[in-house]
Amino acid sequence: MVPDILAKPRADACAATVLGGPTVVLDLGGLRIVSDPTFDPVGQHGYLTKTMASVATEEQLGAVDVVLVSHQDHPDNLDDRGRAFALAAPLLLTGPISAGKLGPPAAGLAPWTTRAIPRPDGGGELTVLAVPAVHGPEDGERDADGNVNCEVVGFVLSGQGLPTVYLSGDNASIRVVAEIARRAPAVDAAVLHAGAARVSPKFRGRPLTMDSRRAAAAAAVLGAGVVVPAHYDGWAHFGEGRDELELAFDEAGLAALLHAPEHGTWTSLRRDA
Ligand SMILES: [Zn+2]
Image (cartoon, rainbow, N blue to C red; front, side, top):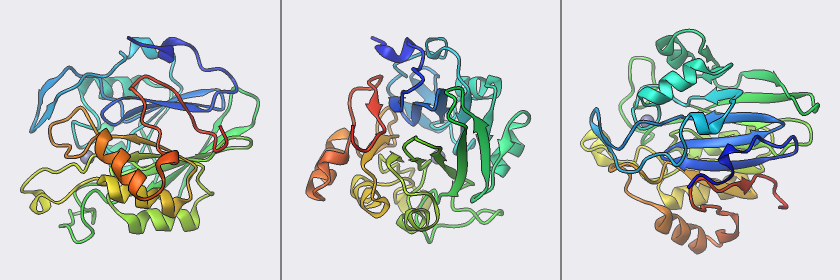
């Protein structure tokens, strides 16, 4: 079943839905934005095993304005069909190293740089701010570029009259979240890549993304009013799913923030909704 994914975004819609794995659709400022697109079928993908398909196909999403790619290196965040989808989008934003590897028309945004996108809703521009991410433990081995695991960027989306939305990408670091809370516009809604992804023996099997408790801590540090978790099911290397997220947010006293409905169901990104 593909509920309202097919419907065109309303001009006033500020909502997100998870399609499965890391893939999220956001309708914001009249723009349809897709982050970390993955559409390949279940099965073996390189060294990783996909266990659940996206609830929507590329065609069912209709016209997309922007694709955001947190990193291009890992098949659970950007698979073959996701790559083709991203490269065909009117605008593809990612980190500078990923942009170089993806090739044109991918545009690389270094952390703390922005790109302004005209909004079809008449509200001016949507500002996309790239923010840092650490794809594993803080003391994990650094690659030649100085990144743990590989370059990953998150994004903060903001604009007049819109909720400010943070997309974490594959980030495991609360230090980075605290830096974003200090330096970026105040976050209303956070799309957090959780799931406690572990790929042993990489970093002794320690999580490459947030576990559920760290996601609850990130929500508190950000002061977010809405949390939409992504990257918590659909792959065999994800150690924690919806149940663990619900438990962790409840134990932190933050259950009201967590919105983890069935994939394909919209969640409002407005704090007061
Ligand atoms: Zn990754």
